[in-house]
Image 1 (cartoon, rainbow over the protein chains, first blue to last red):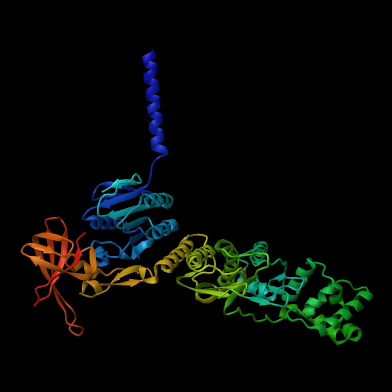
Image 2: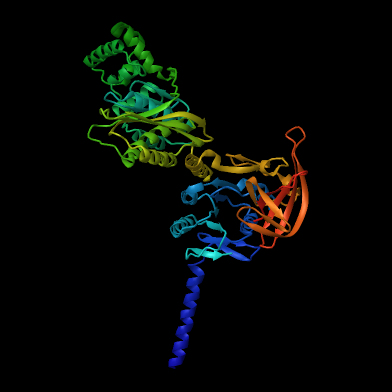
Length: 160
Length: 429
């Protein structure tokens, strides 16, 4: 009898957990078909290593309707190549931020005008990442960090 | 015709009334200004606003300009003025004859004559304007003379009064003189005062259906003997027109913060002036309730201007491809959002996603390519793709190769015919 009670309680608890998971915690995401991944809106995604720009550009080409802010510390991306990868250049605002990368990124996120923000910088501080994470969460935007090496930080929700 | 009158008693500030008249252009295209009141023709905009709505709007606009008018609505300018003054639309007193005699311009001589007439009328027991109108025309000339007849006609035919011309000022200027005890030396109190000035300036500008392109902030400082620069001046040129206080204020904050840090104010501020020097027509002076495009455009303009102000105008841009074979000249920067992209690029061989600003000289030794920092072992070459400039410009020929290296990096290099040099121009990152 006691066991039966426990089993029924356990079942009802499981049902409750399922309900909570189904109702409250669904986060919007953007699907990256090439890698079969969901990039969460309001989170930071890091793409590291060689081929990082190609991956980011492929992701953009899969979402041609979304506004994109492409922030570079020192501008080196080649827009014509992005066009060849079928990125809608009319949707991409480029900025060369130099030493003002954090400020630029925060301004862009706070404006709430961009759904995807790509940042290419040589150095990502923990403090910077935390600020970006909070701003991304508020703006509900996918922030993609491009780096030479994988970034180890708790603020990053996905590494590609 | 229906006229709304905003009347300001107790010798109002002319500049402020002018400002209100300018900002009222957003409510109607027919606005007039007298020495003590603003008149707005609202008969043609009744589909947009009801009487109560437009009254509230005028009161709200007045409040933004620190004005507190008495508002009245009538069928013509003098009647609206009289209603606003006596706060009564049905039983106007004979004192209202002043408003019919000189509704727009102040004329002391006429006022004197009208005052005498009113006294006579009151002695005769005529206290209401209605009773004065009812008097027979013939009797008026004999009893009250020329002025009586003229006023009788003016009251009876008030609707035929031509609409006075009013032109808004070309340059919008708002200033505030600070009291001696308001010691403004820091950025925050300065911005607090500036916000009010910007708000007033923009409401005037938006009334004309325009947005700010170039503004100027001028600070006058207490001229102590040690103060080297008693006047500080900043010009702000925006890459996108600004029509919102918060957007404009954040651009100003960025620059002022930077410049006041580098060179603080030497003494307290005594006067702050905000001036709109250049403006551009805005697509719509009214807010669209049914979509947020206008608001988005506003925040877009603000963002672009802020970024351009801080980073420099050439560092915030859209890329537009152009039909040029030389890779580095294959696109141009544009500040406005381009409409479409050039499809002809799709036919070109694959381009690298990273392009160096200046091609970098590489050295080749056997199967290795190296520069002063790095060495790559070549796995395979792909190419060449021969690119030549147009014959009428400087002659140039490059043979491009895609080089696959053992480290996994794909390089985009070129050689020049007749030369042994190899140049790195980009990475297939």
